[in-house]
Image (cartoon, rainbow, N blue to C red; front, side):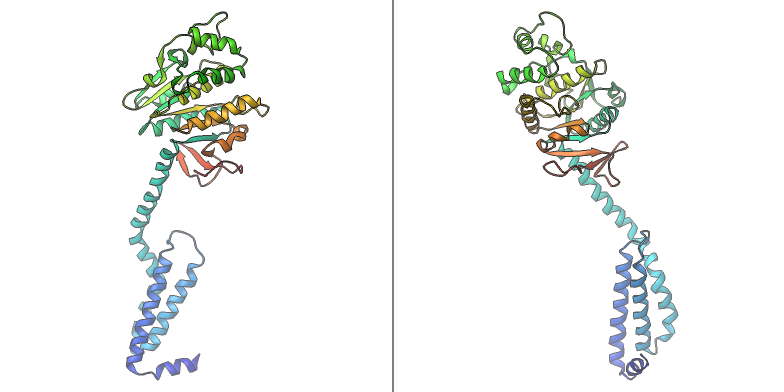
Length: 351
C-alpha cells in the first residue's frame, strides 16, 4: 500500500488533476446511489457504499496532494451528505407513492366490469364490505347493492341512493334471456325447496296461487323493473333484505343476480352477499351448471359476489377472486378492510 501511495505521489500534475476529478466524481456517484435508498428505510448495506465513497475521497486527497487541506471537510461530508440530500428528495418520493396508489383505485373500477368473488370470514364482514364496495364504486358507476344487514341507508346518507324492499322490485323480467330465464329461475329456486311448477305458474300469471312464499313475492305482480328503480343519472339502489331470514336472503340475492344477467347491455354493477347454494359442496350438478352460466353472464357488465371460503369451489368461474383481511400488504384498502390476492391456488387471473 505504501509503495502504491509513493507511486501516486510521483505522478505529474496533469495526471493528478485528472485522477482527482475522476475519484471525486465516483465518490459522488456512490453517495447519490446510497441516498436513493431512502435515509428513513433501515438498510445495513448503506454503510458499505458510504464507506467506499469516503475512501475514494481520501484517495482523491492523496492524489491531489496540495488539496489535503480539504480532507476534513470531504471526510465529514462523505458520511453526512446522504441524509442532507435525502431531505430534498422526500417530496419526489411521496409524489411517486401517490402515483403508485392511483392505478390501484382504477383497478377496482376496472374489476367492476368483470365477475368478482370476494372471500370473507363471516356474514357480518360480507355485509359490511359489500356496502363499502358500493360506496366507493357508486361514485363512478350506478350500483345495485343487496343489503343483508340494513346498515347501508345510514352509510349512504350523504350519497345519492334509493332504498327498496324485495317486494318493490319486479324480478320476473326476462330481458334478452327470453323463456330460458323462467326455466333457470325455477331450477335455482328449487334448491330452496320451492316447487318448480309453482314458480313457473307465478311468473305466467303474475300472482301466487296457494300459500304465500316470501321468495315468490317479487314475481307475483309486475312492479317497477330493477333498472328503472335505479337513481338517475348515478348512485346506488339499495335492496334491503334485513327483515328476511337466511333462506330468503340467499334466494332473493340469487334472483337479483339472475335478473341483472337478463340485461344484455347494462350500465350498472350488482354487489351482493351470497352463501347458499354456492357454498354447498353437495350441490346438484344441474344447479351447479346454472350457477357457472350465471357467473359467466354477469361478467359482461360486472358483479361482486361476497361469500365465505366454501364458495372457492367456483373460483375458476370468476374473472377475479380476492380475500378480505388475509394479508399484510393489500392491493387495496377500503374503509378499514384489506382486499388481498387469493392464495387458494384457483382463479383465472390476479386483481
